[in-house]
Length: 194
Image (tube, rainbow, N blue to C red):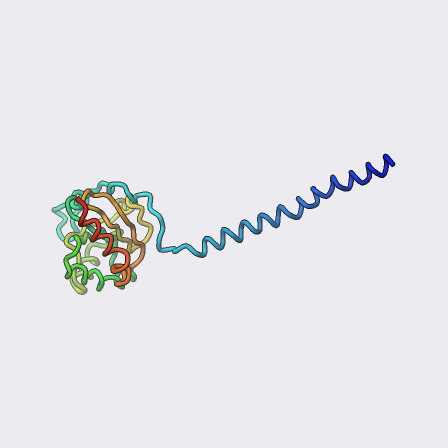
């Protein structure tokens, strides 16, 4: 009887190893499916920025239209601003240009341009043809200021409050729906803040 009991106990000890052998890969597969499912629900245009809630990074750059003058982050103090990063070689920037012209016409927000990794002549030529929606444009020919702002593509737009703190980052061209549903409500809210 002792031999039978030992044989029976031996078989029961092997079962957990066999179960673990099959359950572990199944569990890992299930975890991967869950992560994939979560990833598919995320919006790739809403990449969290570590700059949200932080002061706008310092910069001093030449103005696009007048290299003898400079623009700095101080321009954001006292008024809610949009910092729009764009380039003449960017097709998506051209798509959003009419919306930016409309924003300029409305005058609801200070619109500052950051001309990113561009040729000054090409940028000025585009603005001559299509119109200039910006109150002022900083020229970031080498892209160093863009790096400080975490720019990895254009267009990108930052909403900056009256104290010069970044409150939101929009990736991609601004559409009328983006303005009405996301950006305008935030700009109006921030305008009411001291």
